Amino acid sequence: MHRLLAFIEQNLYFILFAVLQVVCSFLLFGLNPYQQASFTHSAAVVTANSNKLSSDVTGYLDLKNQNIILQNQVANQFQNSSLGTIMYLHDTLKVKDSSRQHLYDLVPAQVVYNSVYKAENVFVINKGTIDGIKKNMGVVSSEGLAGIVLKSNAKYSTVMSLLNTNMKVIPNINGMEYFTELVWDNSSPQTMKIKGINKLEKIEVGDMVQTGQSSLLFPRGIPIGTITKLEQKENSQYFDTELVTTTNFRNLTYVYVVINRDAHLIAPLIEE
Image (tube, rainbow, N blue to C red; front, side, top):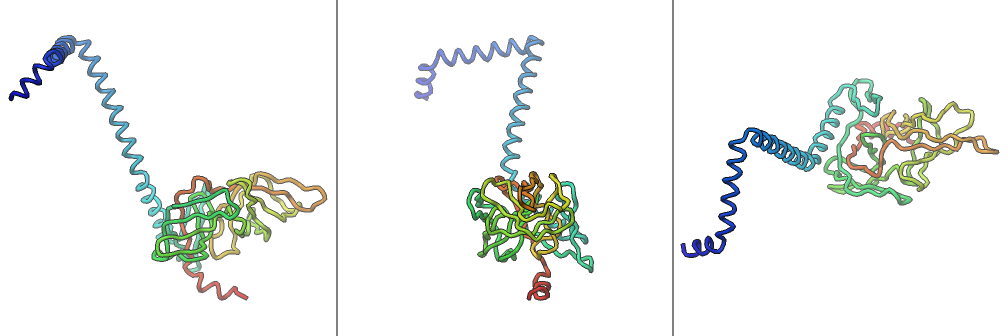
């Protein structure tokens, strides 16, 4: 009690000032309709802004969980559909076998490491052998082709990025496969080149480059990129062709590992 009285004595003027402020505020806003309405409006604005800020922060913190949920929904829809459909850009990729059973499964994964400026870029995903991931499985993003699994341990897998000088993909343009080289020259993390396309071929700037039927790793029709440059070289019968990848590798966060359920049955039939 003695300490309380001492505290009041030391802060008497401040306490008196605070009490008078409360009384004045009550008289001002309680007895004057205009000031009361202004105060109510201001309080509502502050409350609304505070609630919005709280909602934004909560939404941001929950964004990771929502992305994981969305990934699982897409993968489940792909696996449970009798046609096995995936939406890419404005096109629908349909995957089915003769028994109307889906041929491919998707395993959603998160990228935990990624490089884009090396000659041999890779990224690491948080899924491994316990999730059924093995070497030489295809990996796609929600935008298009991303890479091929190089190796896996129980929980993680290393993926050869499309931005890798060792990556080999046969491009399909306008429904025709070109057994040429689709290469990345380490110049830009969004640009690749196609070598060996003859000038007589009917292709144009803006054409979509996709996967074809010459691979067991990916379904046909997965976007790789869009042709942005098509120039005729002097004293050459080939185009100088460039494309921009549909997958934004600098912001690669979530991917899907493509599992061909019948790869072990098909591979022996096509091996020499």
